[in-house]
Image 1 (tube, rainbow, N blue to C red):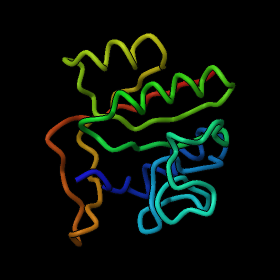
Image 2 (cartoon, rainbow, N blue to C red):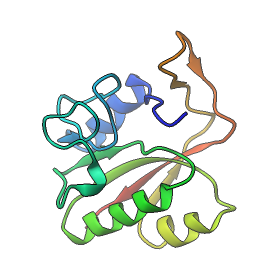
Image 3 (tube, rainbow, N blue to C red):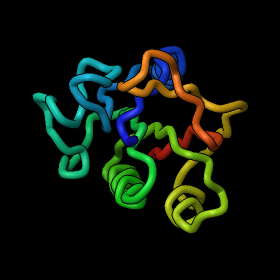
Amino acid sequence: MTDWQTPRVLYDELDKAAGGFRVDAAASDTNHLHPDWYGPGSALATDALAVEKWLSPAFCNPPYGKGIDRWLAKFVEQQGLGVTTVALLPANTEVRWWYGGVVPHASIVFLVGRVPFIDPNRTKPTQPDHGSAICLFEP
């Protein structure tokens, strides 16, 4: 499953701390948390990875698993273009992508407990099998 939604309460806290997001950068027409989003069903762009320069600040809860390194490269690219991205990532500190794509580029806050993501196929939030971190990629 790669389209789990961030809990609204967590998103709202991050939105407030960021001074108001301008875009939800990895969403769809059924799970976006901001009126403007990149992903399926969006009027802005159906693929955030293909957008040259994101609106800033951007929130991103990218698909976890294979391909996450492409998202990390996009965060770093956007950082170089002056875009701030607040990313909700799995706190997988034992893997290479964490040390190559996150540690040298972002400020990291580890969350206590596990984020109860919302699975679109269920009515109750789902507890993941890993912790999460908020990673701030800023110019």
